Length: 387
Image (cartoon, rainbow, N blue to C red; front, top):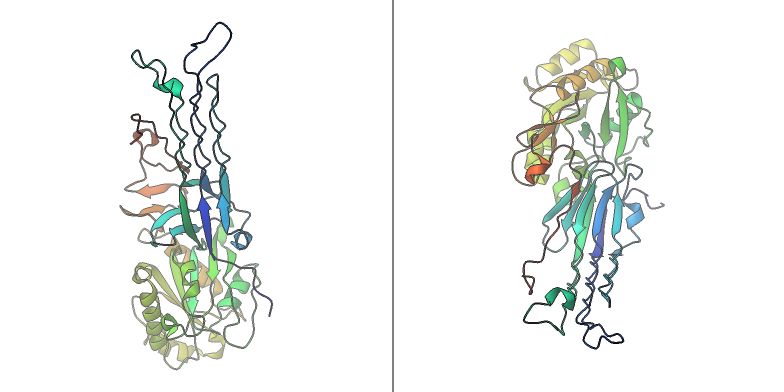
């Protein structure tokens, strides 16, 4: 079987450029035997950035580019000539990519928007030339600063698909069939388990030109947290979803038990997933009659929105879309953006603006706002030893 082109996990080694050294040149010219210091400063090293690019949907282009090095800064020279700055390096990643430190596992940054640029590694500062150290009592300094070394780090990039609704269910529960029935996506559909080997996205059209994004992930089974089946490898793709749609076939002997098993596997992977809004879809209802469906309703949790659907006949699909849209736009279920510490921020579906505790931060105050896209900071030399 050919290897899939869907790559959602890569590890790359990044290094920013080192700063150029300052010059300790002394000016010499005809009739100017003691022209004094005129050494220029070294240039800064190149930075390494992550940049969101909506034209990418996978990390495949980084699989064979495991080393990313920015350019080094040039050295200063005579006549107070400043060294050239090192070339910056931009790593284009699909929207929804999260970066972690490979050695410590520490969260580094999150790229969620097209064109968003995040500073990953800052280049070293260039050294000061001897022109910067002249004083009234030290008129001929014969020394200069060396360039500052760059930063080096191994980074893990994980892609988490951005979708509104995530499909959760056992193999052959009808997830791919539902996605193909509601959207233009055409995932592989067959009558054997684990047909879906990679996540799929589809845009579901709703009333009055509205739409939402649905994500289908490979099926999980009991014991997936222990590595059975495909394990929990793809569950990262529903961590960003606002709503989870559980899908269980109507011919299942005990729907409630299968639902509890799915919840247990999600909890073992990430307990925060249980705080998301949930909807239950009982699939393959074309195999059930009205009396049996009424009996099944009495055995399901009363507080769990439930709908009976058939992706083959189209029964209940309109009701399902109405229910999903209502749940997505309910006040208790706003799409939450991942933040590292602090309060959570959610994005309103109608306005597209951020809301929450951090929504009114002002860039002038040194804090991020809704329009901030670049996390870059400039430093100044504090003293000669640059501490």
